[in-house]
Image 1: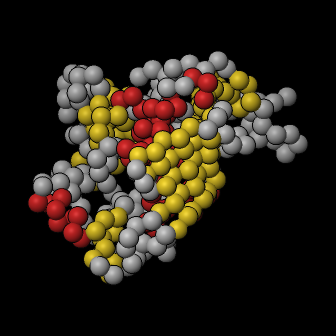
Image 2: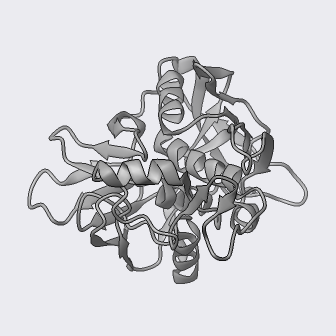
Length: 310
């Protein structure tokens, strides 16, 4: 007899402390187990009212430099993509995230510390069946030289990315990965955010990136990487773009069964792609899935597509 995959949350409360990348202030977040069908919910603990923000695509408020979501009262939380990426890879469905400020801590600039601490603390199955969002047809978004697409896959979540910077240290390359826990932690989780010294200086002058340092991002100066220990992977830049894409795409509201392709895409392109998915209800379906078996493939139980609310 087959068993359907269940929803998941964390086993117990987890706290992260660190520096906000743009505000430069010390901040912390607390992850709390949530009930079935809760989804991912942020709560601004520094505010007394109107402080709940659901992590869903139609709450995206800004995609400049990072992904920012807000509620109908204009209350925001930003730089969520690294934590959302780890949550996606760990297949967590329900979680409350208490934030003491408007921005998450950047930690080391990757998602590894989030991933490791959550995994080591423990993840538990819940009562209700897990819902996946299955992509049924090709959806594309193009904005100049930046493009992104989602298309059907063989009941998995796979990503392929093309990177093409006009820079001697960032070569034109392509990277593809089938996302599961092993592949994510080995190939993606440790990849850090990166930037150029000229941009870094301009952001500092504009009052941004106050918390940026060589401890939490890769900084390039001409043909030189300023970080003492260099890169964690020879192609760390493209791996981080995939890390970001996984986090952005998890704002779809469910674990994805589909194939993502990005070509110089970023936070804005990823968000616009999600908008296109939900502009056509025939492009997706909410489904349940059997646990993998040695003797039979996973069975998909189709449900009627519907708009996913905030």
